[in-house]
Image 1 (tube, rainbow, N blue to C red):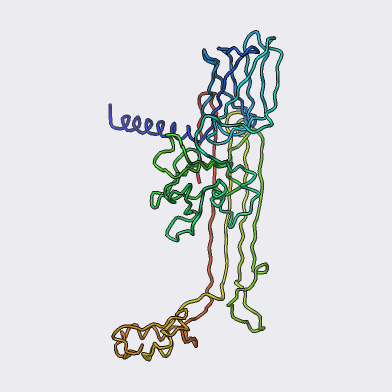
Image 2 (cartoon, helix red, strand yellow):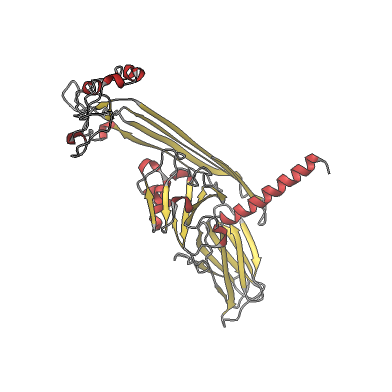
Length: 414
């Protein structure tokens, strides 16, 4: 075999193996047992799960114990149908499968013809009795309706319980959060997006998740996790991006924050009119989403965009600069209790009584210090204004193709 075919074969094998692992975690599964009115199990029953939004369906047959399992189902609303010759068909609607869920749905078939059907609407939430872990699903309604500072979806992780969020680190990727789950460390949480690992290798925190309108849902799980949640002991956050369906859906939005709606800073200086200066804040977050069919029942698309544009000019940024006394070698005011939270500081040699000979200063440092803005504050405090600009755009595209009940593929770009 030549090098090129060998390389292509190896690459294809790697993609298939990693795709299978990812697909298994980004979906849901349905299981249960089918029996007759007397309680006897029924083997050979055809069980079909149909996703009502796309028409995607998958069928299996019950085994000798009347049990069935339908794995790797995309999340969303479903209809479950069971049929066997000599019995009435059983149809259950209103089933909503959430990410990584494995609900048990049992059914009882009554004697009759296949043309007759017993239809049940699943109004009650499904109970997952196969998993020993503790989990909470943050569904789309809460993602969109709960207020979020800066529309940061990861702030909702704390709703899962046993989660604590610490202050972010400026060295981390934008959108990363320090969240510990169930007493674990922040880097002990596994993040998954559409079934693929979504941890940043630099600090093992999360990479940015889609903005709220582009995220379908996510699950926070901890305690008694299954083997597919290895590597991270604290917990897992399993998120799913929205997908297109057989009908077109979309929305437009813009979120605005403006200086006119903010209170003035406590230490903001006064302007020429005698009023405190504002921070000049102008924050706009425009965007929209659109999804629908390319080929009905087969090929679907989803696209989303959110921009974040911030313009602000804080008037009360605090820094310290050398005072005229410091440049002359007198640090007595700087070391006084008034400048050190009520504590007197004694500077070490070559200082004597908190004074030093200014000829010991570096000429280059002295030259630079004299170029700094002067301050009349004895502690060296100086408040100044500096414009700050921040622009960020998030673009998400996703294509789903359903070849058959056994073959499907999707691609996402973010």
